[in-house]
Length: 284
Image (cartoon, rainbow, N blue to C red; front, side, top):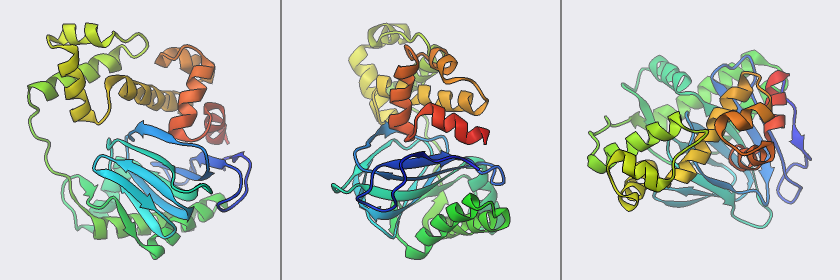
């Protein structure tokens, strides 16, 4: 089992605490249970899906189409690679239980229920579903008590519930226009040269475009400017390296942060817990 980080005081009004971990009996899933007051998540995206139940307070989620306000009984649904941010919607903060299922897990459950073809995607960003929210918190409780049978059963039940009620096949990706192609090429360059990326001007010159045109195209394609995307991408790669057992100081240099405090700051903002605590939770 994982280990909690911070000070635990359940419910809005207490101090911040968070637990981000994996339960070995539930492969393809990350779990986060937390209460945040001052913490804000900058714009970022996930490789997999997000299924979150707000259990106290109000969470404000910045989505591409606007801001959502989620209170108790709300379930927030976010597809892979969708840029979003989050912050408290009231002074007392918000508490929530979140499931981060991988694409493979979602596809597996979709195939089992047989109602979706192709790659499934959520069609709603937030739903009021008290029973669904309870199922999410029950997955956490079962995992935390080491009840693998219950945790797996409840996980599949809640994923099937959300897919059958609020999902459809994701539309086929359209051929990118010239600007979109430049954005994709820029992303590839930044991924390859993450530790020493070029400036926006040099990147645009390499791609045969202008800095302003590239910035606009990148924002349209990925929902954030290149430097914000790069920070998010560095944190995602840092997570994979930490999962593999690498030390935070080594990870910081590998992904292009100046030092471990630099990694700590951005990792904590995006993931919700410090890298050291994140790594320890996976080692237990």
